[in-house]
Image 1 (cartoon, rainbow, N blue to C red):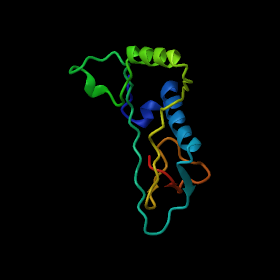
Image 2 (tube, rainbow, N blue to C red):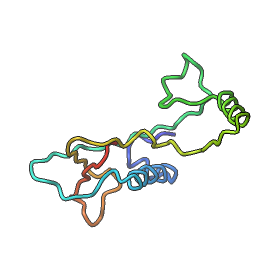
Image 3 (cartoon, rainbow, N blue to C red):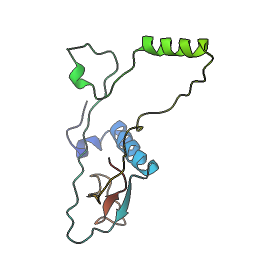
Image 4 (cartoon, one colour):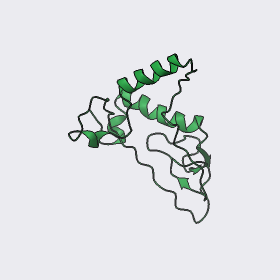
Length: 133
């Protein structure tokens, strides 16, 4: 079940873990830094969006609107691996969950701390983005 708001999500350990994982990715990728809010700046408000991702077993024209990312078919992966083995290619596997996110920014962007994850030592601080979200 998908929560309607942060308060609801914070009652479910699975959603808490998912939100923590998302924020940990930002930390790993050095996406932002917590700073005092500059004068004359109105930071953007972040909003959590709670959606369960669907698997690759969707039907074209029926439930494709639920897809948020392209999914490789198993047949294509098998053909690729068979060809790589035939040609003695080296194949590398990597996590591409965040491969195309976090591009560089041309201007300063400030965002409020995410609801439910306010820094206890600096509750009035905002995040200055180093990279795009």
